[in-house]
Amino acid sequence: MCGLSGEMRFDGWRPDLAAVERMTDRLAPRGPDGRGMWSQGALALGHRRLKIIDLSERGAQPMTDSEARLTGVLNGCVYNYRELRQELQALGHRFFSTSDTEVLLKAYRQWGTACVNHLYGMFAFAVAELDTGRLVLARDRLGIKPLYLERRPGLLRFASSLPALLAGGGVDTSLDLAALHQYLSLHGTVAAPRTVLAGVRKLPPATVRVVEPDGRQRDERYWQPSYLRRPEHAGMTAADWRDAVLDALRTAVRRRTVADVPIGVLLSGGLDSSLIVALLAECGQYDQATFSVGFESERGEQGDEFHYSNLVARQFATDHHQIMVPSDRVQAALDRAVNAMSEPMVSHDVVAFHLLSEQVSKHVSVVQSGQGADEIFAGYRWHPALAAVPREQEPETFIRTFFDRPHAEFARILQPDFLPGHDASSELVRADMAVEGAETALDAAIRLDTHVLMVDDPVKRVDNMTMDWGLEARVPFLDHELVELAAACPPEFKLAHGGKGVLKEAAWKLLPREIVDRPKGYFPVPAIRRMAPPVLDRITQTLAAPAARSRGVFQQAYLDELLAAPDTHRTARGANALWQVALLEMWLQSHGIG
Image 1 (cartoon, rainbow, N blue to C red):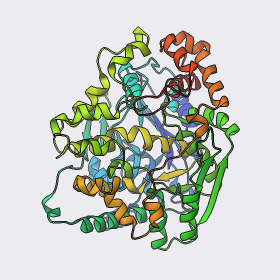
Image 2 (image 1 turned 90 degrees about the vertical axis):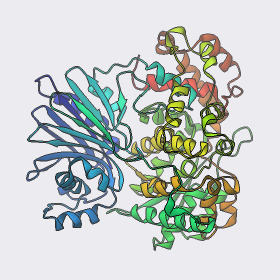
Image 3 (image 1 turned 180 degrees about the horizontal axis):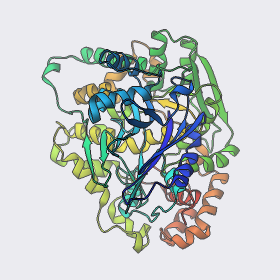
Image 4 (image 1 turned 90 degrees about the horizontal axis):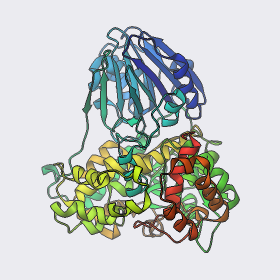
């Protein structure tokens, strides 16, 4: 788990090594254990290293394979690197390290861009072909590892975070109006390839991009599971699906134990993280380090779920760490969390993840986490509403159920210069749901959740907050084979028992019913949800700042309305509207965007 950066020139000039160094240094929190630079011809690469696999200097990056004539940088982890190493050795390849980065380079030499089909893991990488000058960029199937891009005449820059690209200089920081529309409609989500900045894009998940020395490029999407029922699953009962899901999850959890350092678990006490703890215990991971975070109550809202996490910790005899955060720490943590965001993220639990990661990183440098289960197993409140909807009506039902606000409201929220000329968010949803390969309306919704919205909300949130403390978070529910199985599972088995039915039935075999049958929880941060005075003061200061006034994104009458009753105005999805608009401005100011 690391951070990568680079520059490729198409104009005959050498790369700006000072800019690449600045980008690399901005990634230092992601890789506190080492720094490397490489340049040849029109290409330069930078890397920050977090030592997880092959702790020796033989695993340092950028890594050059002189026989293959390749140089590469990798962010993430290839979980099956040992098996691939054996396969490649049998094909005649020789290794000088025990790192997964070298396995990537040998795999590229053997299979070219098709090497991604052999990789099980979370990754973003850049591989330079030294003889041709070609650059290959790729991102894992579920977009767990980020890769940001800035293209302008004559050059391409790329990095593991958007702030790193800003450190390189010269980025067009004007707002992308379609992305702004998505941000205010989709609960802070801006789908790839867009970002909220017009000058920065994201490589989409499951994509390989080949960039030629003259600047021509081509993309290949190498993976997309089918959301249709398959002949090989015909006749499977609920019990059959339960057992298949449990077996696939066992494999996913076991894969993510590959490391040369200890591994912990972020244990909320909910179904998903508790299942991970149970399966680790089942495969012999005793005295497992587990971590839970809680906050002081605010205006009657409970701020922790320690009762449930303690129950799981006792049952499986984990080395449990319970972290209680006083409300007066939230404001300072908010500023640091916003600075760690590659893009503005409105879910208030982003601060919880940041505070939790700070404490966890003092004990371990790798954790498993339960993100993704709600998306792939239909665990959200809008999923049941789609079950009986005809396929052709599904987009409009999803828009009414999921969106924070309708397009018609934007005229009273945004200043005229920031109003997009079209309903960009609804167009995104309709286009994705029109694609073939989803059998029912719910299948299409889960596909959108999993491959578009989840990538740029919960997955990005966990990556950004953990990596700001040099902590690697692994997400077994996003194992691509488990996602493929879940995609084929009939909707009725997912919707059973109030959602995530097939997963709950699997969990009943391993966990107390009190954990499995409890209401859905989350990381509660009452000080943010209820706009406690320290948080409200910070928001008021942000919106009154000269940068916010001169930018003038929001109608002042709308801001005044929100500030007059900060805990009252909620979006259609229940989010605090003031928090949503203020967080965007806070992020822009935090990253020096005037």
